[in-house]
Image 1 (spheres, rainbow, N blue to C red):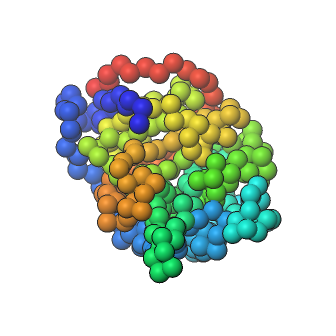
Image 2 (cartoon, rainbow, N blue to C red):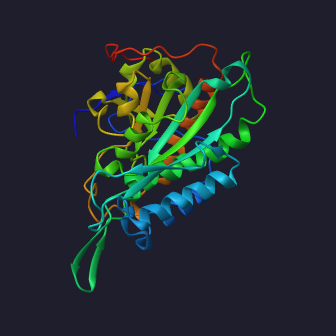
Amino acid sequence: MPRVLLLSLLLAACDSSPPSAPEAPPFDPLLSETALLDHLNFLAADSLYGRGVGSEHERRAAEYIRDRFQEHGLEPGDTSYLQTVPLPFPVNGQTGATSQNVLGVLPGEGRLAGQWLILGAHYDHLGFQWVSADWVIVYNGADDNASGTALMLEVAHYLSDQLAGVRGVDGRRSIMFQAYGAEEAGLIGSDYFCEHPTVPMDSIVAMLNLDMVGRLRDNVLILVGTSSSAEWTDLVAAANGTSSLWFGLDDALLGRSDQACFYQRQRPVLFLHTGLHDEYHTPYDDVWLINTQGMLRVGNLAIALLQDLAVRPQRLIFGDVALEFAEQR
């Protein structure tokens, strides 16, 4: 894991220097912990056999996400909720295999409705491995990335209720919630969307990515992509009022998850990540290790960012700006 630098972007109300292992300040969660656990327990269950790329189990996970989008009143992000993603390799010896992205839309209003925000998370994982005729090892991928998918679903649920009728001076931007397949095979799902976007790429104002957000430690959230727009630092500091998180910056990971293709197309991106751990890409990445309270904090931050970005009159300006680590109080 590349070196992470701690920032003192804690709430201005918390007027103290960051300790080496800061205690998490109190906060009021906006999302349901029970709902997050329901999603996690479904997506990371043994019965989904690790949601392997191109498998029927990955498809079942996609259908679960689609059903939640429908329940929350989101519109399809294409001609349907599912965007078929061709795979460039055989699955179980069969050519012509496919994965799928799941796309749900919360329409905007007014002049800004034609501009888009993306909240994305990949839902596939590594599948399973036969050890013997009667012994199978399942890679459940609770943190990677059932956690990001579960959080994306609950943020979509919250915003579909709370943003209804909300508009700024110029209206409100549309939000597309995207669940990507085939990330573990090389970012195939998100790359396919970027190559076959269902909205003009230049209409996308920002892309937020949730990947491995379930293992918050010492209240530190890693932000990747702050160099893609000079405005991210102030936006995150303002949005942190409901989360009270500490932050690390690590733009060495810009090409390592589903924000990569958006960044390559000069879209401002922000990847929220709670860090690697010993269970990463092992069969031991299970739900019981997930820090759901930490997920709720990350959810508060994502909601505040999207609410701000949805109504601010000006677009973010893309640019590879130098990272500044000056302490702020």
